[in-house]
Length: 240
Image 1 (cartoon, rainbow, N blue to C red):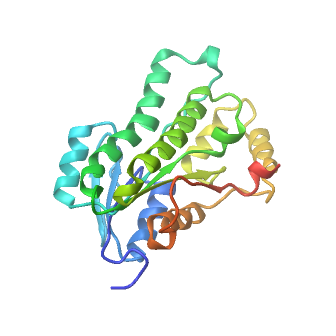
Image 2: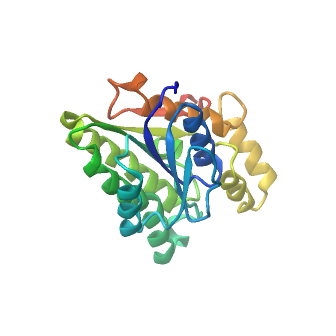
């Protein structure tokens, strides 16, 4: 078997569609065995073990990892975006968004960490360009993504001497179902889409496969001296 992840066991959350599905497919192409996790059943296939589960369920996560075996790389894509300025955001929305986006990430890191300690591994979290640049009308989502970025750097420092690397992907607007749902919330979806596209220096949205390739780099030995890093994949959004 050849490939950048040959013989590796990898876990990907949010793997039923979008970035997670694209990353699962690429990791399998690169030789990995993938545990694909989502509340919607991920598509099974060669190299993919699907798990339909709530990403905040620590018991399910621990049981799945025990069955799957020691994990070499974890990528945490699972997220929800509800929208709304702070004064419009209910406590129920805060609870839901922080639970899925932040605590779903924490849950799976907790589940894979015991098997990585002493043998090494790669943790790839997923933030957003909005966590660095700010964004309007989505207070809970932006806050959750900022927390993920800070958490990643903390993990990188705490576990570096045990061979564990932790890095954070920062995608821009990527052509996924979540992006389309965010536009649909706007009073004028077409205008919101045009504004978002123009905000990127490259004047286009990213493809899920472009983010998957960045995740592959961070998960693989090609990034063996990279930890605590923030890797933007955002078409120049942050340069403007």
